[in-house]
Image (cartoon, rainbow, N blue to C red; front, side, top):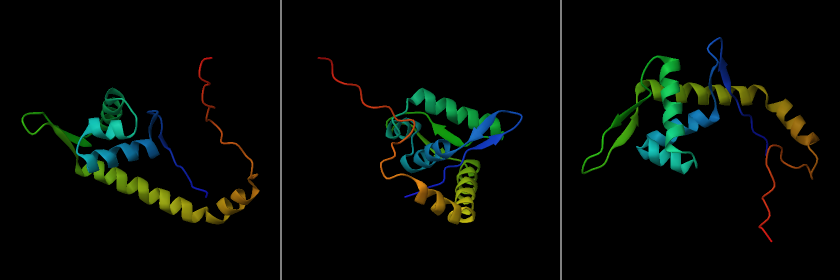
Length: 128
């Protein structure tokens, strides 16, 4: 299976929006919590919160609204801007994949059957 992964870089700010950010926002919307979304992605709450703050600074508005705890606990929900970001990003992904479909199939056909994944480290051996 071949898939296209897109990261959008905003210059000159150096800000970016990519698959991880989109997934984080989608999970916040689905799970109703930044903490739960972060945990489901094996990410620290602090990192997730900093990513959300960065998005809000980049786009000049709230992408998530949070509610403080209490008896029912706190929560988070996406704003209209947060939903708009996800929708635009996913549309870009679909259109780019459609436009590059033939070339992606051709490249996939060139991949060796025994090719090892890049960027993944082998598990560490247990100490003897």
